[in-house]
Image 1 (cartoon, rainbow, N blue to C red):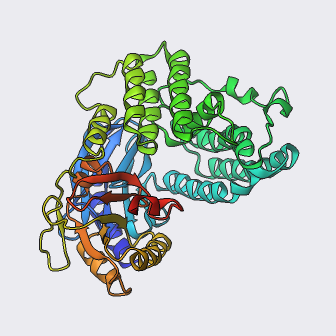
Image 2 (tube, rainbow, N blue to C red):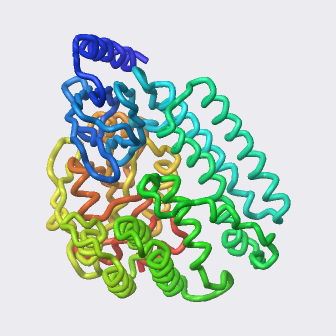
Length: 463
């Protein structure tokens, strides 16, 4: 609360600047404060394109003035987390952020605060709904329908109540409506194939004929939706539902995943073929999710061949090509690319030369305490069973938070390191999930760059 008070004081300065200015129309201000920062900047973007990289000052505050900011949906990112902010004409906003609980901590203040705080509250409600819905997919159809309809009605009522109170613009209303509807539609898309996977019951043929009628109400070629995460989540669910062909009782999981994801590329090409920009964004989203899940190098090559046949995105910033190239560098037998790692005394650790025995590298953050405790319990068990294996825990927090957390627990079972360059970790080691684990041979070469310490079959890699 003390930090948020500081942010509010900063906003009072912003208001003074606004009142002294004669500029109208599209002038806007954006700023705030980041508690427990992971990087020294905040990235401000629109339509997946960076507008500004705003540096934090010595008090971890940031502030920027835009002379011509068009009304619309923007995003702000503090790696690895991001959220949305909507600017109407002449809006000026401050935001309070705490990386220890990024989404829950966000509070907007200033001109335009009400609609943005509503959107954050709706997001948090829907995240809670999403977790509660985990068991819904086991239900028979009627019970499933009643469960998701009940939740949808609550969120729709919340939306209507706030729309009446806040009286926001039509531009903002588009995204508020879509967030409510797409969350509901996504659950419907998940149901047939998740139900089949969990129960073994093929239910698609038993669904009402109008089960997918809502698809006709969606404009898949609306550019406003392309980079909106509720739409991306819905699209992923829909493509999964349309493309998944495997039996849930047997089969080669990796080969099935390759076939299903190539099917998704083909479906997306047919759905969005008339709009190259949107099609490329959808193809990139499919490819991004697949390449980070299936790390079979041969399959990756087959998948990328089809992706390159369909995509017309030849920009030098194409993230899929970058990820594909980075994954190639992480194949079995290669050395891990060098990144900045330090121990608690700030002494550098050389990943290329300091590995002397078979090594397991895992990752942790104080923001995921349950994972932290589970992974260290597992490390202690494995250490007893495999005393000749060296374990390294790589933390992704800032130095202060790292040392504070280490002081609360006994982490003697593993060597403790911290990355001082998160961007390099993300780009060179393709780090996107905290449950990622890397196994190295005694000579420092890669044995498996994409596994999970908590997987029941993990010990197979230590034999």
